[in-house]
Length: 272
Image 1 (cartoon, rainbow, N blue to C red):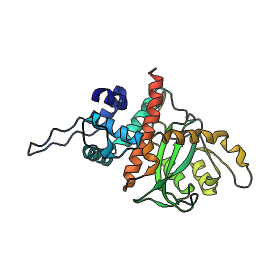
Image 2 (image 1 turned 90 degrees about the vertical axis):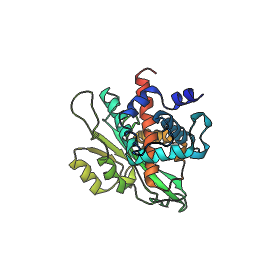
Image 3 (image 1 turned 120 degrees about the horizontal axis):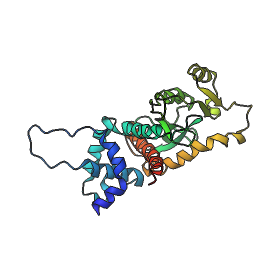
Image 4 (image 1 turned 60 degrees about the horizontal axis):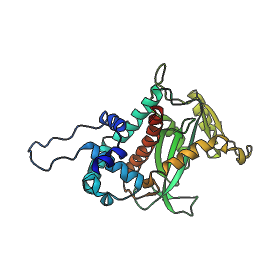
């Protein structure tokens, strides 16, 4: 059961990519201690926890490791920025195969309930309940290129510039790496003159809906793409409600969800 469960949660192609970004295991100079669990088994357990939403102590016995071990390794890899590196590596594979469409990108955000921790605040759209917000930019097909988190009371417009700057240089099928969309779509929450000037200064064409001018009925013409990606993110049940005290852990689970979305497109390209 263990091998089948590990293979299902951490398939061979994802494990091969993960091995390129995971740091080497620390060495005990004094020797002794328990044998360190295999990285692939722990990776599978972390992905299971992210997608199922279970707590660390609720991991099935099929993984043959404790929740404490999974949490410690998750913390260790989060501090080493493994999840962001893995997301970028999967994007590189997609970009090298021409699977990323930069012609029209869209950005938006989604709020999640938060029980505790930093980067939380009263959600103005949910009766002031405490929450956090996930921001993302997706390509024309809905593949997440850049992600970020903030308190729920942060205005979306304040996250646009850091989100665009957070797009990593991604490989292209031909030519140099790319990190700038050809066109960027956003709703009326981003209708500010300084944002338009900033995007224009970087050579990015913008299509930001204008308040009082454009009808809200037409905002879904291109915005449905990012809304579909938000529904894909909800497949990672750990993001339905924030239980993590540290914002780095919430960002890590968001990066895991984004990686899984991009990896599904990669396996589809491979014919799996």
